[in-house]
Length: 130
Image (cartoon, rainbow, N blue to C red; front, side):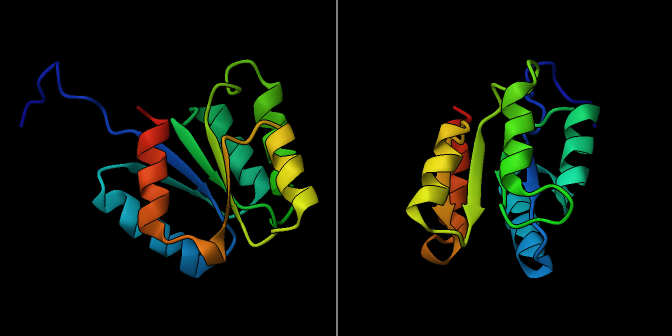
């Protein structure tokens, strides 16, 4: 099948999550919604994806091996070609100081995993990519 010139390339979501169950759930749901999904299980892997080909949006856990989510976010926002990428933090860290730090570092949104459904995350991704 030949794609028409007007046909948009799938939007890419980099999911940075070390919980295998959540990683699979995000992957299945986002692919069903038509996204191209890249999966990173730690902060170093996330940076490697960014260097290779920046995604359209990042879903970022904070509690990660090697580089934590705050460190990844700092690098994203400090790099000229990445700083415009929306970053949605998805975490179980719900302390006010964590939320404030994430937003100060430039997160587009800060979601507590236990308070949000995957369908709601997909809606937010679609809204931020409009």
